[in-house]
Length: 311
Ligand code: C2E
Ligand code: MG
Ligand code: MG
Ligand code: MG
Image 1 (cartoon, rainbow, N blue to C red):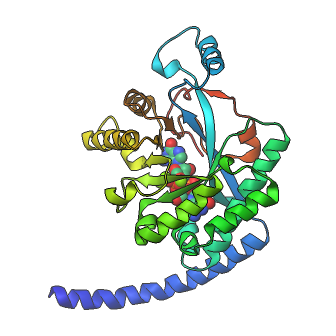
Image 2 (image 1 turned 180 degrees about the vertical axis):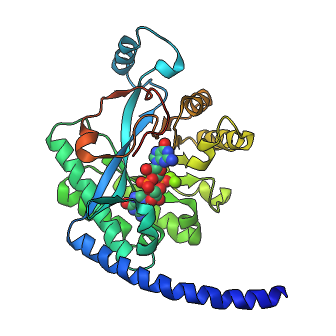
């Protein structure tokens, strides 16, 4: 009777899909308006470097601040970049990307949104440059459909040109699954982007379908350990095994490894001891509006008290 159950299930899901379709249409329409009405906004989450050995000046600055204690958790780490994360300010409420990006992915809307994200990031980079802020690279997330459109390098070149921003200040984050859809084309497209001077990271690394053969052919400069592995550091040994392997893999490839979703000192200490280069997470800072990001110090110390304060 499993087959019968299957058939019933089919009807059941068909019914649900009708409701879904209606909701989707509503949401799609308001998202379209959101774009037109400037209701989309970028937040910026700091990327923190774990081994503070860039320049003697930086090291001396860090040493001067770390007078009292030498416990790992007391150390201060330099801010080395940011990730731009989209938000929708909808009737006073801040809607996270998980609630509208997957839907936008189903239509050409995601291309408009993706182009807006690149444009807005370059615009912000220009503003920070004009204010004389230290120049930190900002990474944008690229969705599957946006990548499939095939004109990513042109879109990026146009925005860089429009705001007169040097290409090394813009970075891309893509998942391995996006690249593996059509790996040969992905190599070409990524090379067109890196030729401009834009660095590429593999996001959510370890969760998708990956091929070691292709990994070495993609011009990538960083692997980002998915937060699901980071979350379980300290109480699930498989998570530690996976995180450690990704760190080793990145370093074998001669590229940087970044951990995302670092919320506590246990996770930080593990990652730092294994040689992870950079981290992002609530332990240091949630994603922030541009104005708040500007107020951040050049050197960070892990937040005191409870891990995972509100976004
Ligand atoms: P992602 O690129 O992997 O981004 C990391 C997510 O982890 C972000 O969620 C960030 O706010 C969250 N996060 C950062 N630190 C912590 C932490 O310590 N603990 C926990 N639990 N979470 C942390 P967010 O902003 O909700 O974005 C979710 C996903 O939506 C992103 O995952 C990315 O795939 C997508 N996304 C965000 N912005 C854009 C965008 O502009 N374009 C596209 N195509 N996708 C975007
Ligand atoms: Mg990302
Ligand atoms: Mg990620
Ligand atoms: Mg993720």
